[in-house]
Amino acid sequence: MRYYLIAGEASGDLHGSNLIRGLKAEDPDAEFRFWGGDLMSGACLPDVRSRGGVDSGLSPLGGAHPAGTDTGLVRHYREGAVMGLTDVLAKAGKLLGNLSFCKKDILGWKPDVVILIDYPGFNLKIAKFCHSKGIKVFYYIAPKTWASREGRNRKLKAWVDKLFIVFPFEIPYFTRKGIPFEYCGNPLLDAVDNHNYVRPEEGKYIAVLAGSRKGEIGRMMPVCVEVMERMHSMPAYSGYRFVIAGAPARTEEDYRPFLKPGMEKYVKIVFGRTYDVLKFADAAVINSGTASLEAALIAVPQVVCWSTSPLTAYVARHVLKVMEHIRFISLGNLCLGRPAFRELVQEDFTPEKVTEEVTRLVSDSAYRSAMLESYSEIRKSLGQSGASRSIAASMIRSIAGKQ
Image (cartoon, rainbow, N blue to C red; front, side, top):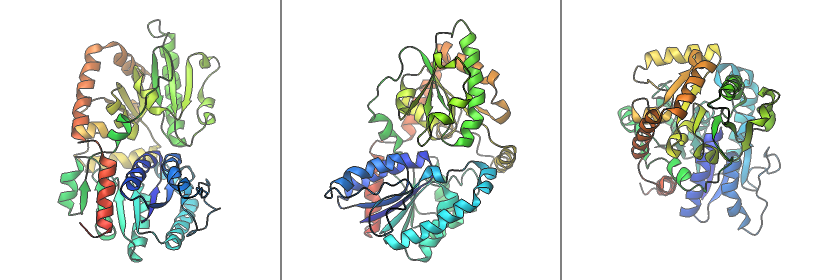
């Protein structure tokens, strides 16, 4: 069968790559065309090569492979990544162009199903289009309508054939909303547990994950750099190094300009090894997102930090006042229903507070132990391993009309 997948950011690329492997295991004749990134490309590559050495179609712009002629990457997510309302407005023209191209590409390639992965601003428009054309639509990694924009539930119910959710706390919510869904566990368990870990740095170090988008990095790095300077000046922590886990689709130039002369002696930037960086760190400073849940599953003490533009922050706070049941911004804390680790949001995201929290994570053994015990509860809440293949098998049965 032909599968057309759309992921718009790094976490979607990760989930999409695991799903592709699951689909290939369940459907040896599977063909893929997708919007995503390097991980999805890597998941597809062996399959393409096995068909007589055909070109993989992994052009970063997708322009070399007209719709209907070959499978592979259509657009890299870095081309359309946005953060917050101001970024959306600035890139509106480009996003509309991508939307128009995507619709034409889907019609030209004629997939058996379109699988949308998170990224609701773009993907819900594609869902409406595909539904109008009679193309089956699955939504994998549900839009977070339990946190904001509940009006999107009406669109999910109208345009999506089935929703595939990955968090246990979503089960009662989508049940109440009457939206058809399936829960087969969370694929991050497989990604974390099957990784071959290799230490990226000798000695003690603090991990820094500043986000995958330029806007996130621009807001995180200045504060993180001051935290590094403060800790390096303290006798108790002067021997620590700091390892920045470079995000996929980013380069050193996205991080290096924030560092000050001399910091290269105790600051290192590592790409393509985020799990390794987390695994061997004494503590981690993490931009809110999938990485905070990955850190919990890998079992590294963490503090989650988040800031955005004043406009986006104003809107977010208004939404959270309306959605009184949402008390956290981190997936791990949401899974647990209480704080396993601290969240420093907007005005609280300061060098002083981050430094205070990181030093406590390193030095307070009781505090660390309590956090790691909470991590065990988070892991248990996510169910069994093998989620990606289970989800793939369920999708194939649904396409065949067997469920």
